[in-house]
Amino acid sequence: MVGGPTQETDGGGDANTASVQAFPDVTQNVRVRFDQHRALDAIERRLATDPLRTGGIVEVTEAVRFADLDSGKEASLLRLGLLVDGLARLLGDGGVALYPVADRGLLSDTELTSNERMVLRRWSDDGLLEILPAGAPALARAGEVSALTGQPVLTRAQIRGYALRPTPGGGGAVQLVPVGPGPAPVPEQALRVLTRMWRCPVSDCPSFGRPGTGQSPPQLAQGVPTCPRHGERLTDAGARPPVVALVVRVGGLVRQRFAVAAGSPVVVGRAPDQRGAVALGPMLDEEARTWVSRKHVALELRPDGVYATDMSTNGTVVVGPEGRGRMPAGQARRLGEREILELTDGVEVARAGTATGTTEATAPGSVMTDAPTIAIRMPRNGR
Ligand SMILES: [Zn+2]
Image 1 (tube, rainbow, N blue to C red):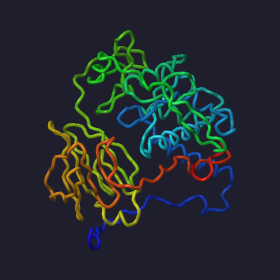
Image 2: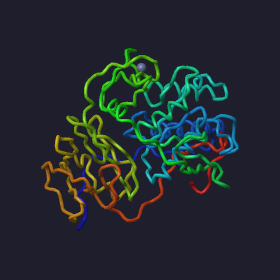
Image 3: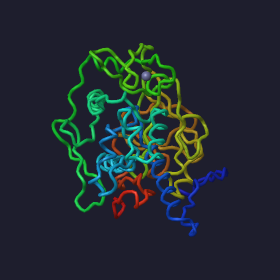
């Protein structure tokens, strides 16, 4: 781009960047709890039970007890973060989420702290964690989700997926080694189940009781769609609206995934204020922040594809097999399968799975940056 960006004056800057280091008199104990809280928040942002957002499935009871990963305490919820980081490195996708499954017994596991158990209950209530009835075979359910979504289970058990190995000398970093031929092909009948919306008779069921287009795969009990949390038979609530998964890439690395459904346009920008919008501000450096508008581009799913409308001050460039071109402002333009929207240098919006327009990709950031080293021993060198 030529010349400087046109500045917008909304003062939308960084989120709070103060750290506990600013308060040297804070006690070690308080600081550890504060860091743990921040690390669990970072992990929480990377958990989902909507396969559009996830890239792998994990059985949480197994994951929290991978003590030999870090030679730390018997059970720690922070280990989920090591798996999130391991999956992000494997996929080169710093926005990918994990699909966590556990049976209800985990919520009263006394090896976890009362705070960790409280966090797990909240994740379950918010639909970020799929809690099965006590004693239910959670690893088998993880395998079912894997079969229905084509995403691997991160486990040490002998099933198709990725084997977990501690990185030698990595002090907690996880290596994922592909095992077997990958997930089994999905039967036709099961795929049909995924094209419908389902409702659980239990009111406010976090998996099948809330409006929206994201949905967990139903459990198939002898072919009958069933709620994995409640064991209740699900009712068919109609065809699932078409959804396309898109990603935001910064510096060649996926930083966020989001879905666009028919009838629900999504605005992407530095600090859009709409519900369901994608806010890029925290992912951008100072220069990029001056180029990207508060509301930069709107994406919409129509019957014949994804449409983008430039709403920005400094413009949006479409990069595709036929070259680069500036989008006309304010006009919806159909986005080709392999086209990428460039909001500014290195900041892209594209369909999930498309190649980046940027040649140099950086390594994904860690969700464990704030994890207290006392709770579990942490990887060095930012791994
Ligand atoms: Zn339910």
